[in-house]
Image 1 (cartoon, rainbow, N blue to C red):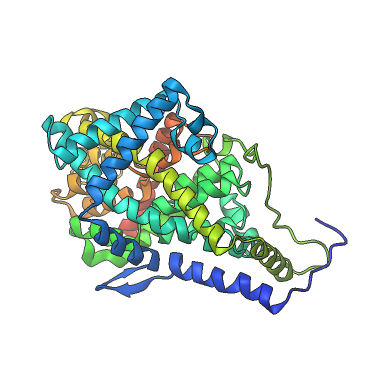
Image 2 (image 1 turned 180 degrees about the horizontal axis):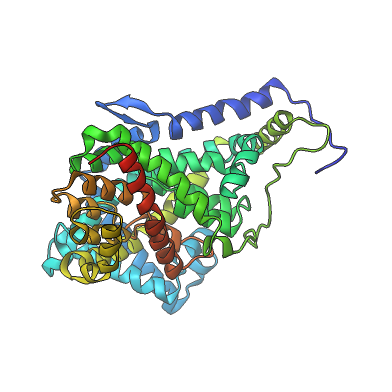
Length: 454
C-alpha cells in the first residue's frame, strides 16, 4: 500500500480526454452490434470493409511486401549497411536472426509461386499456399485497422481505470492484473490476432510480466462471434449456437483457471520486460477509494496520451512491423504446416492417443474424429473441415467447440506469439496447445451432456 498520497483534482477537460477516447475504444473493440444478419463488432466491420476495398490489389501488395522483407533482410544480414542498421525503423524491420531469415526467404519463394500460380501443386494449391494468401488478405486489413485504433484502449487510461476496479476479480481467478480485463475481453470478443498484438504491446511497455502475457496470449485469444457462427454452420450445429457459444465460454474460463495453477504456465518468468521494467500500479493508497484511485490513474494516463500525429506515427510503426516482419513468417510457417496436414498422414499417426481419449469420454467415431483434435495447431479451419463429414452430431459439436477453445494455431496466432518478445518458444506453445486440449475435452463433453446434446 502507498501512504500519504492524496487524490488529485482534475479539470473537466482532462476527464473528457480520458472518457471520450476510452468509451470510443470500448465501443470499437468490444461492443457487439447486429450487422448483415449476424453479430459483429465495429473493428470487425471496419476490417471487412477494408478487406473488400483492397481485395483486387491485395495479392500483389502481399507479394511485394514479402519480397521486400526477404531481400532487405538478406542484404542486412550479409552486408550490414549503415543506412539500415543506424535507422530505428529500418533496423527493426530488416534485422533478423538467421532462423527467421531462412523462413522469410521461404515465405518469399512461396508467395511468388502462389501469385504466379507456377510451381508444385502441393505448394500453390488452394489447400496450402492459396489458403495462406487468402488469410493474409484478411489479416492485413485487420492489422491496418487495429494498428491505428488500438491506442484508444492502450493510451487513454481505460486499462488503468478498469485494472484498479477489477483487480480483486482477475487476480484470484486468473492470477492476472486487473488491467488485463480489457485485454481479455478484446481477445475474446474481438479478433484473436488483435488481442495477441495488444498483449504483446502491453508486455513490451512493462504492464504484464512474461507469465501474464503468455497466459493471456495463449488462453484468452478467441475468434470473433461471426467466425464461431461459420464453424457451427460448417459442422451443421448452428441450430444449437446458443449452447455452442455458452459451452465455448464456460470451457475457456475453466481451462484457464486450471492452467494458470499448474506447469508450464505457473513456471514462466514473472519478471517484467527488462528494458522498461514494471510500469503498472493498481493498488490504491490508504485513505483513497478504489474508484478514486482508478479514475486518477486513468486520467493521468490520458494526459500523457500521444497527439493525433503521435497516434498516426505509432500506427504506421506497428503496421510496418507486422507487414515486413510477420507476414513472410505467416506465409512460410502456415504453408509448411498446411502441407503437412493436407499431404502427409502425420496428424493421423499423432492423433491415435486422442482417439483413445475420445473413446474414453464416450464419443462416437472417436478415431475418425481424433485428427481434428490436434490439427487445430496448424490452422483453425482444418478441424471443422475434417469433422464436417462425421455422422455423430454430438462428436461434431464437441470438435467444433474444441477447435475454438484451442486457438493457438501456427498460421496466425502461434506465429504472432513466437515472433514477439514474450519469453516462450515453439516447444512451449506446443505443450500449452496439447495441455489445453487435454484439459478442455472432458469439460466440453461434460457440458455437452448436461445440455442434452446427442
